[in-house]
Amino acid sequence: MTSAHGARTSNRDALLDVLESIISEGSVHDATLDGVAARAGVTKGGLIYHFKSKEALLHALVERMRAKVDAHCVDPEADPRSAIKKFLIARINYAFTMGPQEKKIMANLLAAASTYPSLLVPVKGMYDSRSGDLAQVAESAGLALSVWTALDGFVMLEMLNIRHFSDLEKQQMQAALIGLVEQQFAAPRD
Image 1 (cartoon, rainbow, N blue to C red):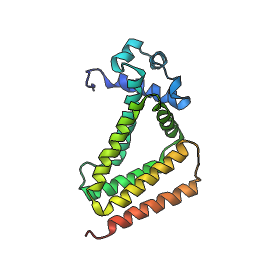
Image 2: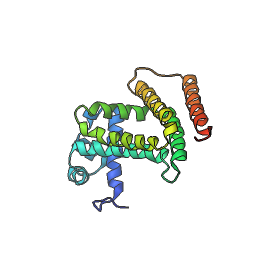
Image 3: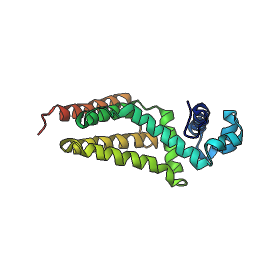
Image 4: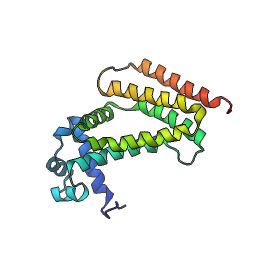
């Protein structure tokens, strides 16, 4: 498989894997181009072939993480009503099964956005496109936006070590949110 540059994506993915590992062990400040290249077993020139700067490397990691969420939660084949229901339930399940390592990477990338504001561009793009999708089913838009915002609040609290919820609390919140979505989409359309 090749990337847009014609290079094997396995090298690119290996570099992103190493970056992710470094960030999960410490912080974004611990990641240097030299360090990532050495740990990935490539030359710095090989890394720069794929990523011209540390910011480009970080941006690619954010894009990969966004794509992972989309792959888990988005069904482009479904009609708008079914797609939103599937999206919300998948997002609920994803939020409550996210591991501590993934939350740490996200927190470190969020902190890095103060130095590299462009890291927020793909995240903003995801929110903009999904908000437009939610608006397609007007009778469910309010609930959908509320559930999505609640999930982000939950993840943010845990990600920033402000509040950690017990397994029971997580199960209760997950069940309540899924129940709200199921109830909303079980109702007959106007």
